[in-house]
Length: 87
Image (cartoon, rainbow, N blue to C red):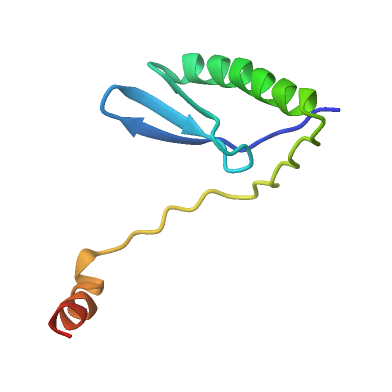
């Protein structure tokens, strides 16, 4: 059975960084997207094998339906933050 685990990819100071919401503690870094994905598959294999050795079930992947980028302006929270500091 094939499983598809969503990986969040972020741009860091020294390359790309990926982590899996469904696989706590599993993180991976790479210089390119191709390297990141290859390492992610390798690390995921090791991660899931370790879970299996402990006799635990593999986590079910969260079905990813969309990726949303929510824009937020700091000014939207600034008045509330100033009120909280005064109290």
